[in-house]
Length: 432
Ligand SMILES: [Zn+2]
Image 1 (spheres, rainbow, N blue to C red):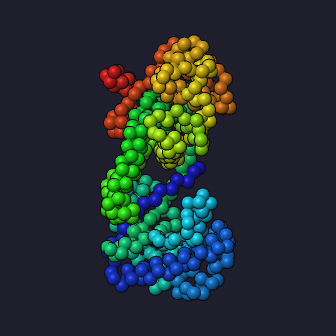
Image 2 (image 1 turned 120 degrees about the vertical axis):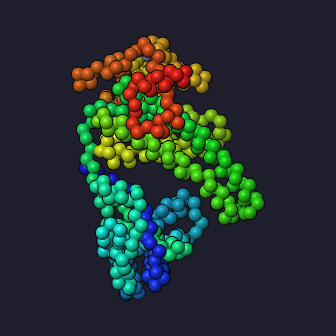
Image 3 (image 1 turned 90 degrees about the horizontal axis):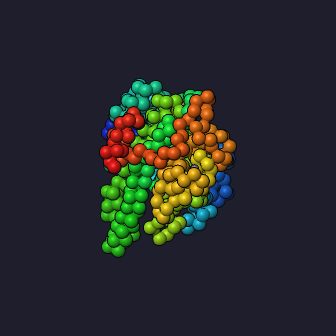
């Protein structure tokens, strides 16, 4: 059983001035506590929330007598998270400040500080007693409620002072059991596609990551330069323009769509998903145009990992097992003969140096992931053509060109799961 958690954001109705003022006061006190705590923790090198609480509980409790005592606990938790990330930045030399700045505040609540009351109301403990707050549920909220997700005991609230509302961050949790896999579905994340291998057929789901990632990168840089010159580094107008790019949203849309498609395909077949373990500095073949190798690499690693992360998250939700294997040599060696594949200059098609059969680079990676998981040892021993698994012969024709089925984003983005092979093959033929 694995616990899956999702954050859902809901707003409260517009609150009466009197009630909202209580929350403004509460936020003020909470902020003071967090500010004191981070200074104390950094000064004394305390990272653990339990230690922090042990040292500071009595003192804070004495100062904020009217506040429910659990706010001291949650402020300690909040502060310890801030301190940890601050110390990490400090170690990397990325901050010049002595203490973390406490700017944005959301008030952390534990099970003593809030309770749902019915589905459209929550009760929050304050220094002026418990307050009932009406929330405005939305479609997504009802989806979680109706599909058997449960509310976790932690929540956060943030004050929307302009509209006199509370923004409430709820966490829904569900326990999902993984099934025993009856087969494997290897997934290889590349620069411009995500390739998967389903029952011996390779599919290249085109993502245009390169265009998306690099395009945005250069666009953002250019805009920044322009607006920095015109209005200074911290201008609001720059922020506004950059937000209009909607970079994050577009990227995450693609991520979740592809994750959904792959996970549903695996679930329908009761397969496990096999992914490459991405290290910190894996050898990579994707540095072409960008001058700064490091930078280009970093940009792509971040986006590869986030696709994998999305797949992993979705898989958890559906109880689909995921397995990571070493990416070593995954597109360099022939899956059948374990001899090097020679790729022409910049070509994705290569030739096996032993038997001369042709391979598509991304298909090679998928097959190698597949065999690595079957062997279970991550070695590169030759795999016999027609690998026998559970008495079944796995299809691996050694004479074919191993052509993948390429599917453009505009197509797969609308699918809920992978359609039948024939259909996809026809599309591919039409494209060529
Ligand atoms: Zn070969």
